[in-house]
Image (cartoon, rainbow, N blue to C red; front, side, top):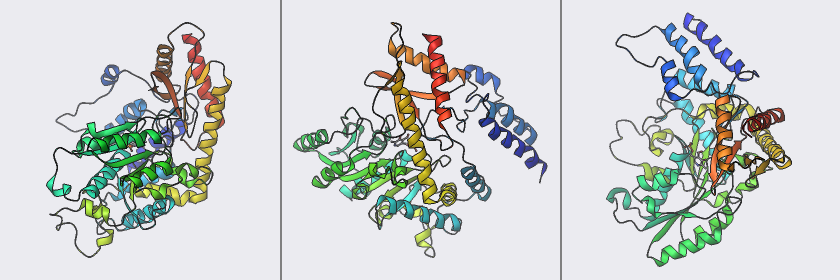
Length: 463
Ligand SMILES: Cc1ncc(COP(=O)(O)O)c(C=O)c1O
């Protein structure tokens, strides 16, 4: 082993071991001004040694970075440390190639097809197609792009002005749709947000009304997205009913399953995506509920060849030759160079098998149920919406007269600064809610107990 690796490995081992030690903070919090003064950020005219870089990594980068593998990290729709995912990332860097052609990524291209076919079959797109993308946002963008080109195949070359196209998502949908509508020239004013009920699910009668209203105004409804696992509440829109309306009005039907599509791996929970085979396309982030390291996202489409048609442009002859056409995956991607994101997921899936993955998903659902109970049973904790999946949105009700939103913001901020627990908050219908997300497969009930103990002890100091 070279001296470099001899020095690097202990740093990595130490970091991973510390993740599970009780007294390790999930974040060593500093404000940006203070942090800036602590870090040696400037790049000089003269370089520095590799030893100096290793010192920076150990004493500065790792010290102040958030430990997303820590058992008190509940802040995002991802979390946990996976050694198999880490292996995938290391080998991806080791082999450092690009997914665009079979010629430079032969094994990765075959792996990507294998994994996508497995995902397609779970969704119910028998002859579908798919590609890995840079994230769920990008997958949603591709869905809208395909729908736009399907609605008017001339737009791709002609472009368009004064679009009459309108699209529909719920008022809980991810912001990437608004950005995609903007980028694709559809205009974010032509995105209609449909009201949701108390569970955070799209109200289908409202959708119907809005479609009719826009038709009457001479608009062209062309796209509707159901969210399977909304960002804040973890809610699943009624897929069957939305699919029926999409069919009735001849609209592209997309499912944003960035967070929730992974429930397809569980026989117990896959009913949440019943009807997925009726969709035209689907977004699936394996870096969320499947525990793959970031980023690991797929865009799946039912109609074979349409992705290729959508992505096709001229000037590619230098890269794509005829020999390996069906494995030159750059031809069905919006990117040219593309990182190998599939290896970590393939390794994880191979390691767990379908049944192992199912057990992991069922486990985090069980823990979410347990957390839900802890909230329900505590006199000062209030559940803000019913828990449908892995997001528990709650707040603390202080006994004092303090404004409840101000109190919960302060509580959350104190938790962040304490480094004991990192959890996020959101605003639902004007209320500040603490959003606990349980996605880390390694967690146990004890970690959930520790979370609530931390919340309650900080709340006590604020009361
Ligand atoms: C429902 C939903 N869709 C899309 C996205 C965007 O995913 P990504 O961060 O992979 O771009 C998110 C992100 O949290 C999400 O919750």
